[in-house]
Image (cartoon, rainbow, N blue to C red; front, top):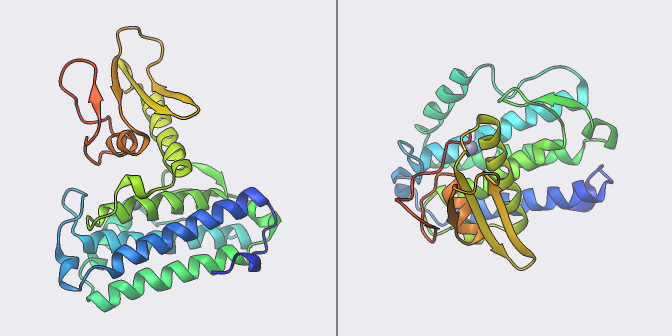
Length: 247
Ligand code: ZN
């Protein structure tokens, strides 16, 4: 995973690729800290064992590789044939042997990295479609993967937390989540504030003076907003509810 071998020359893109690679290394480290039997244990995601998380992260790399191949060749290859296929694939992957699961993660990550490395500047601009149906430039795959590996490393539930995720990634992730709430209108009456060195980051319902105010550190608020618990999060009045769904 040597950055200087990238075909891409855009410095922002190269910096983004570095964060995706760091996140992949972070996920690999947390996975390697787990013994084979521990893969059977629960993840932070309801109904998913750690096996499901590892399978999902592996298949996600394969799916994003298909988007890069699409960008490189112009031949349409979606992430998944259907949402049902994606779900079935994860269920199947979770039944693999520990060695096969680890290989799935390793090989799919290396493959995606090679696809990224060999993509030309021109092809990085090519338009592809995500599993959610969004039409995006191929460069968006870097952010999608970055989010996946950092957050699912926490979901492995063996010691990683949102405080291990770089602030720039947390801010972008929180923006994704709050943008999704805005589109759905589920942030009405809910304002979140995060004190940062550069001032207060406010998101959600900024118009209503009666909005309940949810506050906490950037890692705590982002974890809560992503549906990963409410540790370190407080509200100005009333019981703190789970954050609205974002995906
Ligand atoms: Zn995921």
